[in-house]
View 1 (cartoon, rainbow, N blue to C red):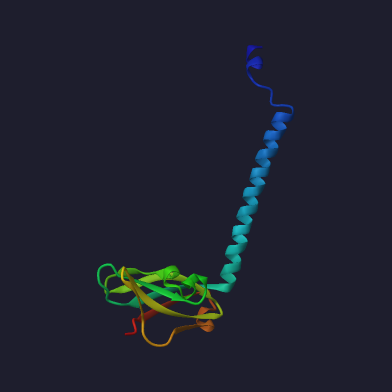
View 2 (tube, rainbow, N blue to C red):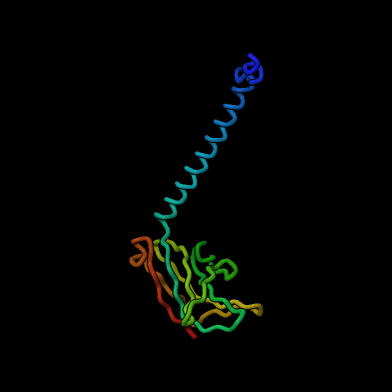
Length: 143
């Protein structure tokens, strides 16, 4: 009998409110997860993942970025482009997302003193290369 008195009763409005609150939180979490998955699938249908590889010898303090069309390449803004990582052989590599319809892009070198854009016309990614949803590019810096 002591034991029964020590346990709080889990009936009544307080327990119902607690259950309802937890259920609403769970519903909210499931809704957020479903939205995130829907967005991921939508982007996968309209964007392609591209592995960029650019050969460019740099100095200490310089980094190579790829910039171009679409938010995945920073909309031509070097501050929002894809930072590439250096690897032996002065190959800079990174992953970016581009529209499957195709996109133009360029490589830039950023350092404390500013940004250097590679020379020449914009590079072009054509939709036929992106139809499988991914591509790998091997480029040399244009001087």
